[in-house]
Length: 209
Image (cartoon, rainbow, N blue to C red):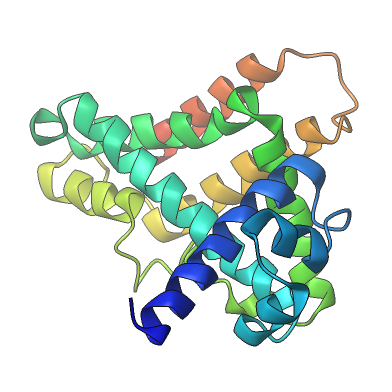
């Protein structure tokens, strides 16, 4: 293995271990030294790959959303992607994202803590791979599903799909974060609330509301 290959291997391992620890223990509670130890490296070595902890956090955010996107693709594929209308694909994807909280609240807390840390470091604008990516430039599963729906007629041509796209992500993620932090200020069932949100946005894509 060349030195460059070893460097890339160690860098990737650092990101993977960083993501694991940030999700498990929290971004603020996890130090670069903790990540280095988990990766079998020295803290000095980690700083050869990343200028700061914030840069490492940013790299873990990219990896997190990369994995989530792959899981969305897999979920749709398992349900017969080729035979689905665009709106059916959209339905599956929105409910998958909405189910992240029920699946693992730590995922949602990581997203919140990660965004807060990057905002405080002044580099939050560098997260371009996470939902919602820019609608015009994105090749994400959801954007492709929206375009499929417009082509096959299952998404209304009169729907402002760009606005609905952003609103769906913001509303679903925001509600999940409040649920994960225990700050929803109501006694409604979390799963039912997320399902209702998804229903509303599916209706919006179809031009029903």
